[in-house]
Image 1 (cartoon, rainbow, N blue to C red):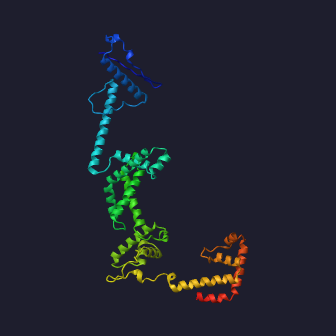
Image 2 (tube, rainbow, N blue to C red):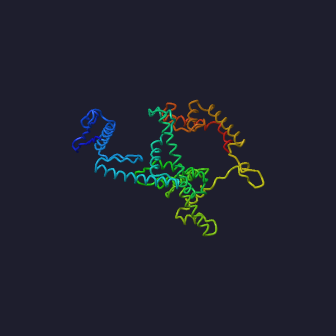
Image 3 (cartoon, one colour):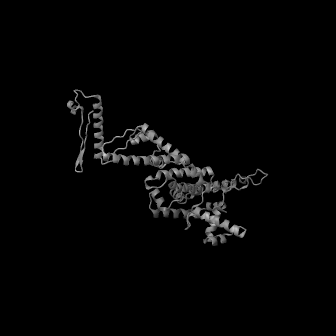
Length: 404
């Protein structure tokens, strides 16, 4: 059997020289045969493939390539190669043991492994802007629809796996915020949204676990949902204009102080006592307490026995009272008659624009001048002339009946 030796010459200053090996280089005298046996062909092909692989590894300054699979065959080149292969085999074994340990942890606890966490978070981070349709994305990104659908499918799959794996974590955090305006199901839903938002921003290269990182995102999402969605009617803006924290933090402090003083005094505390406890102004405590009252439904029944609701006994606005509506319509007619009788068309138009008699927003003299192509002073003079004429009119006395 012929033995073929291959060598590779390289130096830091020269690129590696890759020798070529072909069947034509095998001399018949080496084998003592005129034809190359099948065994020699196999050995020559294997030697050529091995030479090329070693040259590529040396040129890239990498270690010997890891060989996957469970075969029993071991390729032995020389002592250095054997040493490198041993180190590589140990690293490979350590990596396999770690992956197996992560897989066992995943199966036992339901959480994802570190590798899967990094993979799914990377998919979510890259695909978070893929909200349009597949056709729009394919046209904008100049990609095929199949590729876009594959990306979106991976994103949805990653979201589902992360949500299912950390459902217990979301439930444990949401359970601490029950009874604050949202149901437990709503809290879990808001926490899941925060979980996915945190997964978008997760960076596995910093060495933290996904569960530790998304904990604060879940908690933040739940707290914000309670602040914005727990009340049917939003609190006015002036409640949040205090120097200490936002409106929800202020309400929480006053509510806690009320509970503490109620247990201590065995009665409902006054505004002065609450303000003294929190070291705040009495006006601040009174305003926040009054604005924080729960809304009352107009469909609520007055008594337990009757069917009369609160809406039926509450007086409506004055604009809906028939007497007021008739009086207002008569006033409009008298005003229109007064302007058309006593004033010119331009004077009446200036008064309507200045006081908003046509149902429009009142305008200044400068704005009136721009509309009528007049100067500001001229518009003011026309308005003064119109007032002088109206003061001398007898029809003004009839309009005083509507004012009284």
